[in-house]
Image (cartoon, rainbow, N blue to C red):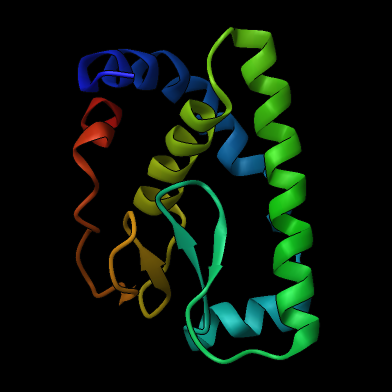
Length: 133
C-alpha cells in the first residue's frame, strides 16, 4: 500500500476507529495489567495493540496476549464490514488511542522505535495519523 493510499484508508476508518477505541476489549483488563500500564511496563503501540515495555510476570504477559487477540478480532470484524485492511483499522485505532487514551506517565511506542513515557504534552503521532487531527 502506498503512503497516499494508506492515508486515504486511514481517513476512511478514523471515525470508525474513534468509536472502536472507546470499546476495544482491553478496557476490561485486570488490575495486574492496569498496574503494569501505570508502572510503564505495559503500553499502547501505534499499531493498535498493547506491548510489553519492561519486565512483567507470566500472568501479565498472558493477559496482554489475550487482550491483543480480542483486539485483532474486533479489528478484523470492523475491517470486513468496511472493506479495509485489518492493519488500517488497527493503526487508526492506535492513532486514536495514542492521542486520547494514553495518560501522563504511561508507556507508548511509535512503530518499531523505543518505548517512551508520555509527558504533560501531546504525543507526536506518526504522519499517517495526521488525518485524525
